Length: 64
View 1: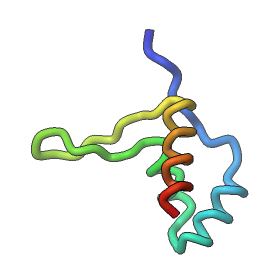
View 2 (view 1 turned 90 degrees about the vertical axis):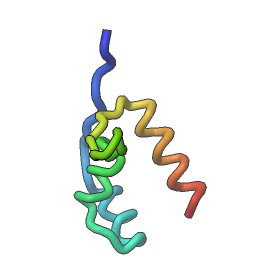
View 3 (view 1 turned 90 degrees about the horizontal axis):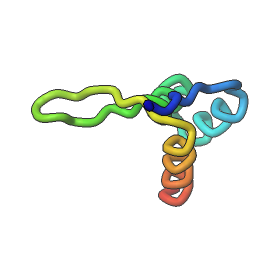
View 4 (view 1 turned 30 degrees about the horizontal axis):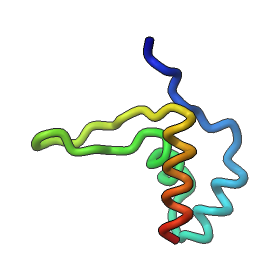
């Protein structure tokens, strides 16, 4: 069975983080929930589940 894809419930916290990073909040949400990966010669959007998004947020936090 395929796991359920993550969805953003609210954007207030994300907007604050995006402002501090100097990027658009919509792009940050899109990048966390549906990152683009290269497959062969093209890019595809990959849906993430809740645990994957949490791991991505943790990795982003560590890199900043």
